[in-house]
Length: 258
Image 1: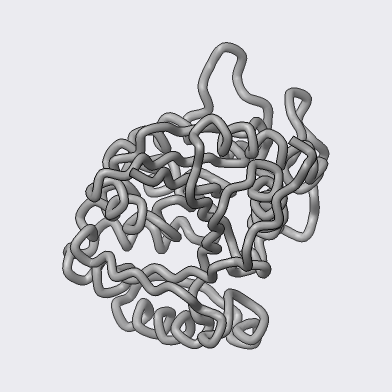
Image 2: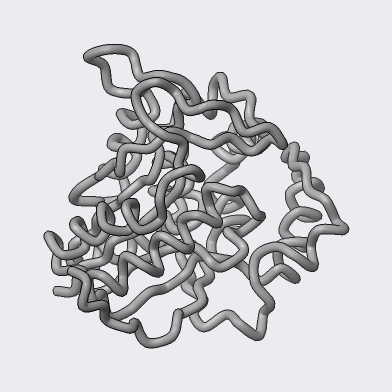
């Protein structure tokens, strides 16, 4: 059966952007692997300990049927205007050399003999600098490994606006800049794959709930929305997050630098 590798920026992105697709692929018998660029920490990892969000990622991934979780070894770059210095034990992902990061990901793609890589669109979705970096690193890694298909997670920006309005009707605390809608995600005309995943809504919601540090104590911009999402009745959760969108990249140009 084909193997699918999903490359994400931070723990919890794998659920929000591709959780239903991963659950569906696993249910159909495919091998599913999740790779995250960062461990979700801004600071240094406590000596001898696994970052808490990595443990949560493994728990959520198990709910989705994921067979393997890999961290590329980078720190979260944050989303504010200021870019903080690197922690002493690793570099922030946005500062990483793209070629080096791509080689790390390509090694996983070769180990798994991956048939499909899930990455992010050129805008990095809503523009987070780590998400934009995922796009560039994922594209290059597919070239290095010769992975034949790359599907870039996104959503039609037209649907995003409607989704935000629906979320507010449901009293889910979301924040977005209406003026930025023309610059985020992808145009509907660029979408190549729309995957209906409402039947996996229960798994997707449970996987999101596994990210307890963000759901219970998170202070980031999407943490309040995550808390509200995990409390929704499953049918309403499926109504909001029951479709996942992708742009298929052009044919991968194989690299001789392996």
